[in-house]
Image (cartoon, rainbow, N blue to C red; front, side):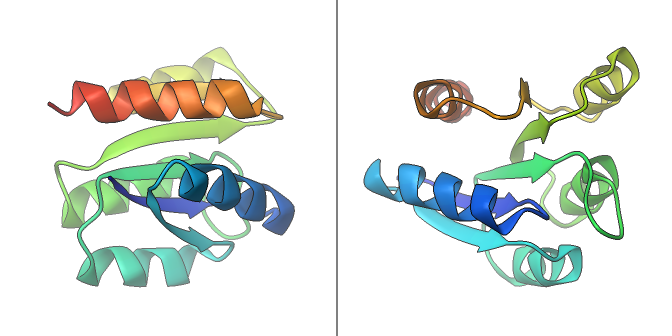
Length: 121
C-alpha cells in the first residue's frame, strides 16, 4: 500500500484521516506542524501528501511547493474549509490531483485517495 503524509492544523482531522486510511492498509504519517512534516518528508519516501490549505505558519500551497522540491513525484490532495477559485487554481497549478472541501466524508476520502494512487500507475 501507499506511504501517505497527512498535514492539518486540526489534530482531530489528522487523527480521523490517519484512522480511515490505516484501515485501508496504508502507512500514514500524521502531522499538525509544518516543520515536522517537511523534516519527515526530506528523509522518507512518500507516495501521497494530504494537506490542509490553511495551516499555522505556512499555507498548504507553500508546503506542497517544498514537498515537490524534495520529492518531485509525490502526489497531493488539498483539503480546505474555505474553498476559493484562486486556491483551487493554485493547487492544480502545483499538480494537486484532488481539491476537497472539509469536512470530507469518509467514503469520499477513501475514494479520492484510491483515485490518486491509481493514477500514479
